[in-house]
Amino acid sequence: MTQLFSDLGLSVELTRAVSDQGYTEPTPVQAKTIPIVLQGRDLLAAAQTGTGKTGGFALPILHRLAANMIARTPKRVRVLVLTPTRELAAQVDTAFKGYGRHLRLNSTAVYGGVSIGAQIQALKRGVEILVATPGRLLDHVQQRTVDLSRVEIVVLDEADRMLDMGFIHDIRRILSLLPKPRQSLLFSATFSNEIRTLANTLLSNPAVIEIERHRDTSDLIKQRVHPVAVGRKRELLAHLVTKGDWQQVLVFTKTKHGANRLAEQLEKQGINSATIHANKSQSQRTRALAEFKRGDVRVLVATDIAARGLDIEALPHVVNFDLPNAPEDYVHRIGRTGRAGMSGEAISFVAPDERRLLTGIERLIARRIDSEVVPGFEVAAHEKPSAERRPQIPRSNQPRKSSRGAETRARSGPTSIIRAIKAKGATDGNLRRQPRP
Image 1 (cartoon, rainbow, N blue to C red):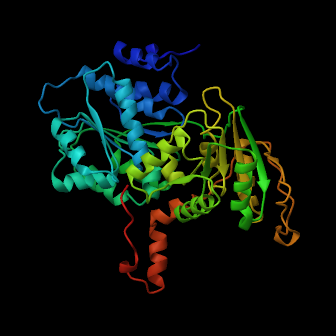
Image 2: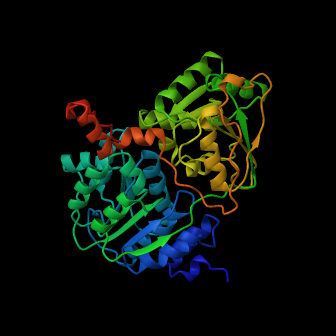
Image 3: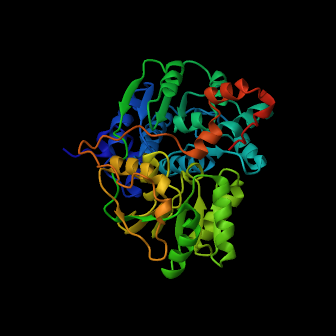
């Protein structure tokens, strides 16, 4: 029996707002999480981006706030949502504003890379829902421009990413500033040991739900692989863009440095390009994305972390310049195209030493991806791996565990790495603090 949003106990104002956006049926994660959050229970949920999890917590939170309106001027922060990146913070804030369009509730987002002055003014005017990245929120705490003493609900969105990026100490400091009791919601793509440890300290008798890992790819996306020597990837990309007269292509690289270098090389060849990654200011990211959407920039080069939250309508091409270490990131990347009934193309450049990564991706999506050698870009025999044959894809469809992305590891600063550095005589002074988002 098909379930509707109106069956979940949400207010008329919220179901109307959802209907305004063209939705009537909740996603699986929304159908499971909304009733739990409405009950006021703590929640530990494994759900990835693209499953509708933002609506899964935003809708019931708005319902609870509206049912218990507090007449106070200025309004105080009653809900705190922590996110790992600026783009995701802006996206979550937009979702709250959209779902709450028929309610008298205020929300705002605070994150780094933009002037703190406008954020201070918004906080002074009063907000009930605050979406923030950990670093910028602590800046506000230090300047005493935010009051967290009346927070009733806290959400950790994409908690695994925040741990990967080294925010665990910031998160613990923020949580120590919040009142008890409160309702706490933790969303993560996986239930790692680190996430379970955090959940044990944050949550009280939580409901636990797990949505199956995102392994399906849309039939509207045509996928293919181009074998190529690692040193000729840039040349191949320029060839495809020029020969195919591509006017809009999103390209994924593993590192920020690689993204910068690729964009610079394409610019030298007369192909307008821009980058989005963690070292770019928010104004730079916003400008690059706007130019890409307008068609002023043909190639937008992005890293996985910075690309979270990007929403580009009718995107025709996605290129994996570097294959991701985590197979799930492949599904997330190519899902930027083939949306809203539009077809799209996802192309992956695979160097000989990336064959094992391709195997992991094919295991996850339970299918072979067509491979096509572009004439003139054949891989020389001495560059091919010794075991040329690719392993068979098991029928069980069970994905293997995968390592995290290179940029994620670079920002994570795990304890094991620090111990290894100290064992070689390094000091804490050699460990540079990562920039806040």
